[in-house]
Length: 434
Ligand SMILES: Cc1cc2nc3c(=O)[nH]c(=O)nc-3n(C[C@H](O)[C@H](O)[C@H](O)COP(=O)(O)O)c2cc1C
Image (cartoon, rainbow, N blue to C red; front, side):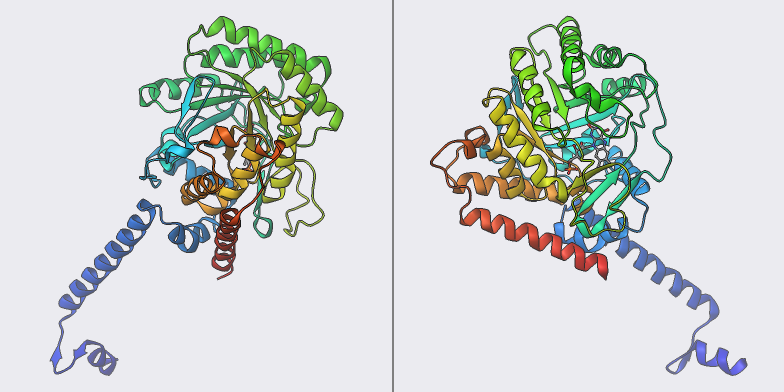
């Protein structure tokens, strides 16, 4: 024992006292901790895509998906997310419904369900942020676990079931941040046990009048029994008329917020036709369509062990389905109804395809959960490159380009955009496996 002690405290030709050693150890620990905090701090702050791919996102995947979601919302709430510091390029600017968007890439509903993180997410570089879905009364949603990562598929399945803090809590938060500005839409849902769905949406319009840049009537989440039925037949007509009437009464022009209808990607051809007819019949009053929500379909090619979980599938496997639905709705509405394209946007090329298919704006959620905040800047940069390479001066010029003769769908820049996104995903897989 004595010998061991002698060896331990012997340094060259001098003995180091226990006290001195303690102090040295302490300062070493401080230095290492300080260095680690500085390293992570600078990496997080700098919005560095590689840093997120190799360090942050693998660590996030240690947490269960719902805890990771909650942690991300809290990080955004307390300003611990990286800011996109570069100003948006002029080619990305667009205006719609009298609103000016710095860029057309928005945060889809479901991330900031309770209106806690909008300012943080606007800082990340989104051109607009959608809060919700919010239900009139607070409700807990479905039992946990209710969110699943499909890592092998770049996808998520969720069956949250409208867990919501309710209108009052979210109204209070949006009121508190009103001066901060930015475009913040409110996505409205209905309570699970509500007997009058239309009344729930009307209550939402009344509660958020003066606070929402736009409203979304969400009748397409697959996790509330009977909700998707509201997309069909007379129910849809009655619902839209009630909501539009409430909006007109609660929000005087100018600055009347548009009402958008969010639809599922799983509607049959006949149901899509019906939605298009309803929208066209109200084209002076309805702002547009959000296409699409998550899908209840499951592609045979899914590789994740969670693929058979009940709920809505989002992310990469939804990309083509939702882009095709955008193209379909654009065609069925003769390009007269604005469309927000959402589903599996992981790259500038994915966003560009949705724009060319007919989307005036795009949104994303799952790619943010998979890749982290730097994906927003990447998508914007790639989209700007693709628009410019194809000779468009603005996003609005490219909307629906695939439906017009004479424009080639891809060019060398598009191929480059695809290569970049594939590289990001390959790097992420390597990092996840290491
Ligand atoms: C975890 C999760 C929760 C969601 N919650 C909502 C919601 O409350 N309301 C809604 O309209 N859409 C919700 N969505 C759907 C998204 O807004 C979006 O339409 C869909 O995920 C497709 O986009 P993505 O592939 O970029 O995620 C949710 C999606 C996910 C992944």
